[in-house]
Image 1 (cartoon, protein in one colour):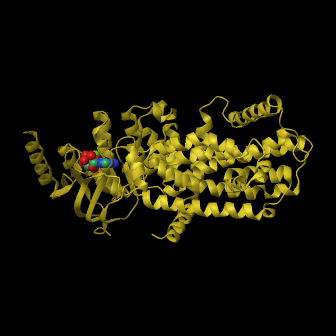
Image 2 (tube, chains in turn green, blue; image 1 turned 90 degrees about the horizontal axis):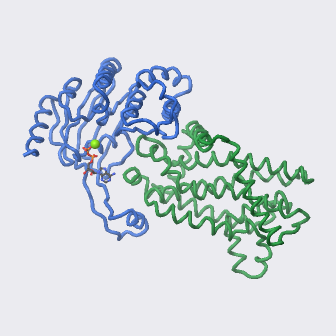
Image 3 (cartoon, chains in turn red, yellow; image 1 turned 135 degrees about the horizontal axis):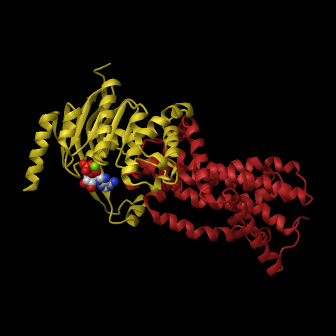
Length: 273
Length: 247
Ligand SMILES: Nc1ncnc2c1ncn2[C@@H]1O[C@H](COP(=O)(O)OP(=O)(O)O)[C@@H](O)[C@H]1O
Ligand SMILES: [Mg+2]
């Protein structure tokens, strides 16, 4: 089947099964939180704890930080870190989604291309709540919403689509070989530290071309700074066309890879899982 | 309507790829040269089944019965040949039959119903019948991971026979559970194949059970279809093959 045909099939599977997909994402949410006594509380506690730890280490421990664009460092950190929580969940969760829902593959006829989507939606909803919390925090700290927040949904949608493609690609590969999961897991921390979630890459970018390219094609940097554009830098996404183009190019490549993986492995995974 | 073919296999073969390890399999995605062995689990099989027929599949372990049922269900794909299936397939493949381990039995009833595209109201209407049939009582609200394999297959059976299947596929699930539950299952299966014009395909090693509700039997041996006809002849053939193996 051609890539165009596969894309059409992908969209059709989503269109025909959107009710099931939504149900499964709600089920996924329930499953993530209902085992714990405090349930939903953890969705908030975990990010708060990690932001506090990083803020403490950098601002108090290392005595770095200081205001960025007139905004306290901790707020700058929060703005860039919130999308990271989502990306972190999806880099790993996307890789494991098909393995986790193997019963949908091996025990019944189910549209496999929608499995990454329902995993993704459930994480996305949690992240949307966090984003709302961040807006409130900024407000309380004296930074009421600006018109630039209007582009948040655009960044979130791009992030959703990007990691959906990742989930299909990585999920298919990892269904065949678990080693791929381990590989991804061991790289997540590296990605976190190298993407400017914690420290300002702008100064580094000015120093040489390699860094400039590296951060330009890094989707984690793109989204982390995209969120900061909304909250801190007050810039529109189309004011940085080269970054946008790099991201879109990368997305097209990943989308191709995900369809390639699907095409190649769809018939094999039920026999392996 | 009655003579309509609902399942047809045309020269279907299925080859499993056997790699030396998971790592080799992963590498095999990117590098064609990674060696693997081939196992022909189903070898050039053709047959067709009409609406309302009930067919028993015989064959010793590894003969390819489960692979055939999985291909009919649409969870696994043939390497070559054509398969046509018409109608809603409800399958009990192996015992656990696709439950989410973290959810309770009741939640799994809904989940499964939703996945099959049933509405909440439709599932609600079936819920009590399913729970009653499964005999799980208080366990229905416990996570499925706490169930014994017998309980899981009871729940699986209860769901699959009660969601009004058009094609019902049962892979050895009738051979677990206690005698009383087995009888209840048999009655239920008998009832739906009689009343609802349901097509039934099932695997069992007990030829007596097969003869109870099947007219037709298919015997598999090493991936090949070696007999297709009257169930009594099929079970004779199966016994012959089996005895030969025993010697
Ligand atoms: N997922 C799989 N990967 C590799 N080989 C398999 C797989 N499933 C079944 N086989 C092999 O295919 C053959 C037929 O298996 P199966 O259809 O399960 O037989 P049966 O149900 O008649 O016992 C067996 O030799 C089995 O080892
Ligand atoms: Mg079997």
